[in-house]
Picture 1 (tube, rainbow, N blue to C red):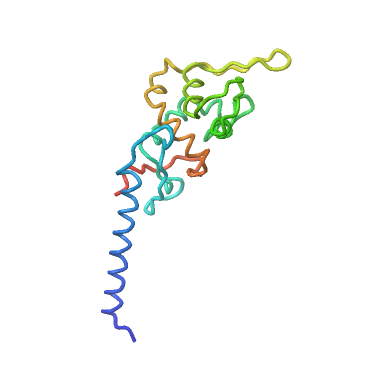
Picture 2: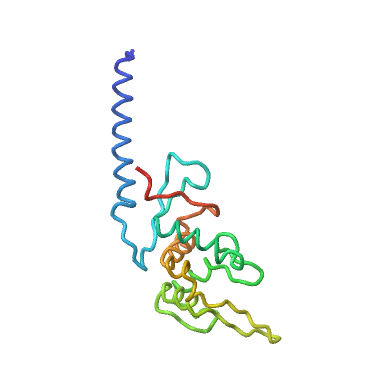
Length: 176
């Protein structure tokens, strides 16, 4: 029979090991993170959070989420999943990753190049029947341009399937 003292020691040791491993895993997620167009985000699980905030992302992508929902979601829908008049940006991102021609008939070298061109310069496409779909350029919108990398990271994290919540994600850089 195991004594209470032995159970206490075993439990304490297990808790210490788990705590150490978790702290290393979490710190590796954001302490060493450096944004690049090829790796514009990280998503880590926050065991102390509830609901949608269990998935925590890097600071730039978090602010990208906020700016997206301030400026872009009215047309592109909640979590960039499209609407009746604006495309699903997760699908558009995937097309750009594959190097396919986009709706404006342009083929971009990288998804980041597609994203910057579309957001800064806007988008216009004539369709059958004379309908013109237009996205205005946002190159002069300070909030958008200040957080352009974060908006891209937010969309990329969802398109890559790493960020699955459609609600507000957690703040990964604040996890201790």
